Length: 366
Image 1 (cartoon, rainbow, N blue to C red):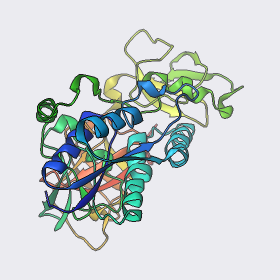
Image 2 (image 1 turned 180 degrees about the vertical axis):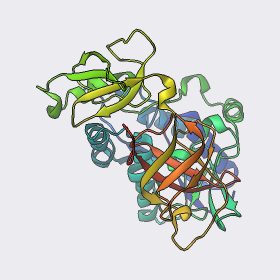
Image 3 (image 1 turned 45 degrees about the vertical axis):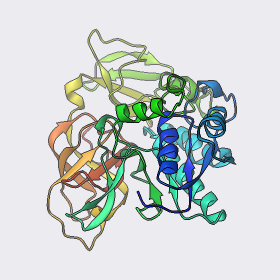
Image 4 (image 1 turned 180 degrees about the horizontal axis):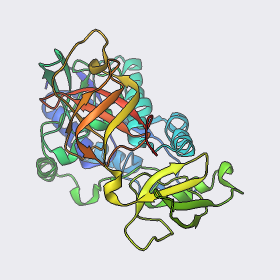
């Protein structure tokens, strides 16, 4: 970790950012904690403030004042968070896509606002508690984010759409550590580890309440029921709306076909929900839009192995582009994670992030 006089660290109130700040202090940095105020105490069907472990203002204050002894500031990010994350979250579902609000937050809110505050303060370095690290890609002759030492906690996926960060301006102090190692450090440093909970889903809405949350929007009111059938045309029943349901989802379906069925297609135009068995979700071809990263540089002619992740916790799977524009990819093994609106993050052979794109189901047979 390079030493520098001053650095800004984004803090959430969790153990990862707290330990990151502590490590920076130990490395000789003059650290200022920044907490982004994203959300009011209550909103619609969202979580109350006390339920959230992401960006928990009171906990950050306690950690900085009582444990770390560093200054901290609160940056109001609610307007940006509401427009770029919450509203886009709603819009994506209205368009039949499944968004990833954590990726959107890093892309449009957290890292940009941390960088903005640092620049206004005359500070060139920022840090976060993400589990990822900078690594050189020999295949693409560039430096990118790598899959973390602890694959189960890898967050390179969540940063795959974030622009303007490089190893010269953004540090990840715990990127080469496992979660277990971080918790041990936290305990040795005197952090209240038991009280530093970990967020596993979108900070403003529980995964179990997505449909109810979306149902409150005006566009949902007064709509006719959706027809539910299998991909083979078998009529199963109806539900109030399919908005908020995701390909591959089983939990929360208020219908039963007498066997284990999963959401296969959410047809917004026909207001129709198609269900299928698990095996019918497996596909070996996918498309991406809005690509970014060296993989999509038209001047490159790289023909080697590429790996892709559709979820942060999945192991990368091998794929190959099937078009010169690299908008279509073929998987070596069929996968059930090809969900429209989600992010495909691409890695080289050494697990270095080299590109990303938004999955689109152009060309689907159903």
